[in-house]
Length: 454
Image (cartoon, rainbow, N blue to C red):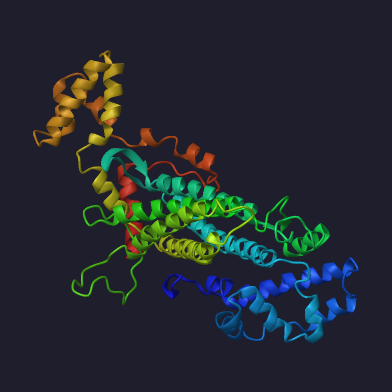
């Protein structure tokens, strides 16, 4: 992945230095296991541990390009130069995939941990937003059109719950790939007993694959990247909503914007949701890599090489991009600007049409049939949409409800009376429950919050 989308931690994880260091650790552990079984001298295993090094990544790569056309062979030659005659005990009875596949599993587990750490940041930021804005009333939208009142805290709580499932998906991805294999060229342990595999895997924090061919089966890698793609979709979903709410005509939330940041080379007024757009765009990349991983599952016989070249690209890139997406979105959420007064203004822009369902139920309680009540409310609502009167006045003119009964329908609090129960279900009830405020109370609180954000 290009440096623009790569954190220092992911760059280090997927570096050639880390790859070859992991290969070497597997080789040394295998030698120690062989020594325990009496297959090589214990002194040789000890000397290998003391002396074996990867002196030059560049030399390995040069040797592969110039002579071997095989990275593991080049690696073994260069490492062998650091240990002298004991080099004959390196890679004893192993196949290349024993080292490469097991090392890849180690690195994919570590990558999942790095991603999960950033997802936890996302969750913490969402929990804070949810609790802070538990009672910040706004318009709920379906099909992009005002529906009924919600709170911004509910929206954040919904994201929080899904982010929790994202963390769980990463846990499952980590578990499915937390396996190693040292079973030889076709998985039969023809030259190395299963005890060597068990020893190496235990010390690497892996489980031995119950059965393998020359390689670990690629349904594991496909599942891992499929989980990554779903997690990327969750991050994209949150980023897309932030972009929607930041539109000029809406402006209910806004990404952080630094003092010397510029939004456009030509339009100095611009404050664009560039990080959210970046997150949404990169989700497409991760989904594409998941498709490539699915294509890697079907191989000839006990193994061919069609998956190898693909995985050298998609596994480091997908995990690097996903960690970057989570990291950047966490920063957006931690510094998100929320404008409660604008939320209230947008909610009231339609003159109370968001309360049409409450009016419908009030008419039914008055004795009207559902069909008659629906026609009455819809007629008033369509007239209000078209500018032929205020919704509330048109309802009063229908003569079914008293003025007080009409006014009671235009209060958001009854619609939000179960917010605390929803928070409890989601696991966000640690903060004291906040009663949905009156319009005056809400305006006072919102003004104070917005002034503080300025």
